[in-house]
Amino acid sequence: MARLNTNSTGVGKRPALLIVDASNAFTDPNCVMGGDFTAEMANIADLLENFRGRGFPVYFTTVAYAKPEEGHMFREKAPMLNLLEDGSDLVQIDPRIAPRPDETIITKFAPSAFFETGLKEQMLAKGVDTVFVVGFTTSGCVRASGVDSLSCNFRTVVVKDCVSDRDPPAHDANLYDLEAKYADVVSLDDALKLLESITIAA
Image 1 (cartoon, rainbow, N blue to C red):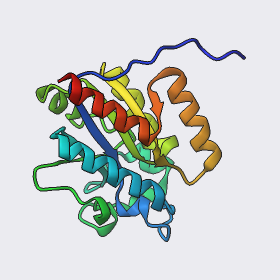
Image 2 (cartoon, helix red, strand yellow):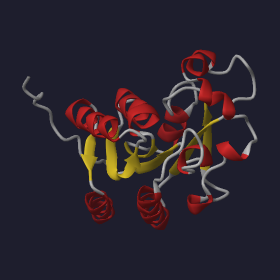
Image 3 (tube, rainbow, N blue to C red):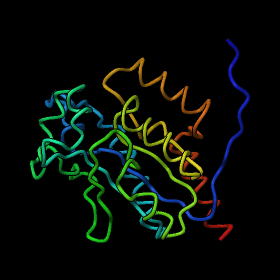
């Protein structure tokens, strides 16, 4: 089957960085949900510092549950999510990219960072027109957040060196699908060049 003929949506003038579920549950290889994402975490840290240095907004997400009804169908499908108790160490953002006090942490109950979280409204209030998506995992919450970013009419960039998955074939397949239909999938080097171009144009 032929690949769809799609365009790059590029970047606008006000990007935000969305770091999806870089919490201990997913970045600790000893956790049932985690993997050894050392290289990806180092790349996220580099991109994060670039966003901070340019004064662009940064958002983190974590999955955490305090009540039985929160995300109950998601948890029924994937029972390991019941380990993500609100306030536990597993739901804290990995200290290698610890959020600053003025940076937003979105607690979500579903795969997408945008589903019933108010994230879209927060971004629009800051004039965001472009979302750079990084984090974990590619086939789950990164994909869902990338699709919903586009659905919210944001230009969407997935940085392939800053996302990963416990299942390498699923990682590759979902990056292919994101690039084909929903986002621009770029390397970290190209992401940094895009940020530089925004600064020059501003």
